[in-house]
Length: 407
Image 1: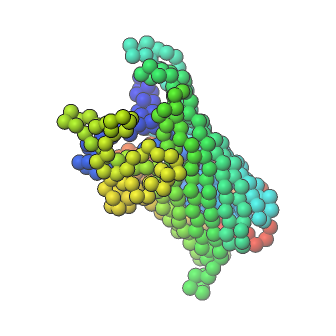
Image 2: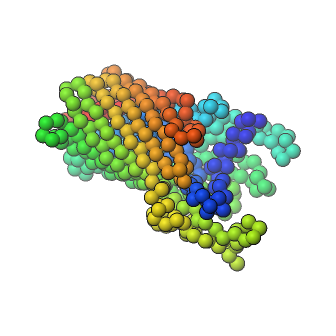
Image 3: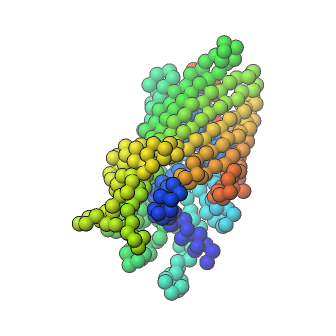
């Protein structure tokens, strides 16, 4: 029964906006919800120790999620990573995210990479409205990525990624008389990365980098055969800088900042009648909007509209940005200590937490751990859990590559 309740709660979060519009108008609480939110989960422990940010962190095998344009600047010729993230560990022990990546620098100018993201919700017992068992099932989702990264100059690169998304949450069960199906979608990422070795106040070797990534621009997803109800996937814009300071021959420290914004329409405020029901627009399937804009629009229009459609105007638009700050210290490119902080406005989800992490590199082998500490009264699905990553790097790239730790 407990697993069934957890599954229903997760499924509701995936498919519907669980907050009443009247409450939004009174309190200003208006989070943006999407389907397949597992695509937004930070999959690796290194970034997990840096406040879940990494758009301009030094390249590593897990750059696919944060900024695939970094691959062509990797120090090593090729590498792969195995990542594991427990989910809702305070409630159950069989919900988790696994993430596998591989990259290969074809030459100094070109790189390719692939990844597999798999999210399982554990075993669920389905029941009918009378409580009779309909069998056990293991809902799951996965995404398969392939990317090509190209260096444009000594300091600048771009990348384009293709993604196939599969989400099977209900095993074909009937919901309110409608047969459900697995959701499928395809999406693309476009990313850019720039890095250059510089001198800090003419006394210290340093490296400055910045990057951006527009991710998950793709087809809406549906969970029924009629395809009438289709939900946005979590398209996102991420941008930020990094500064790495070489303190001496053995010690270096980096500071990085990620700024994120979902490229998904904001839920408007609707007009309600005296009975608390939305007022329909005659002759359509839509409802009267009191403030904001119609969210039922095509994907590209929705991405553009997301910059200016908040019901409360510019003030609410600013609330839709989340920030991840991280700092990383390396000793001799062997041992790392990390700390970070993630902030999301309380009206847009209120995810606020600190992170800690450590890393170890020896020859071709790497190991990372991270730990999350919530800083508000809201529980986080990752609290009281350890994320870990295994990384393997092979072969050195040609001369002139970045000297920052590969992670």
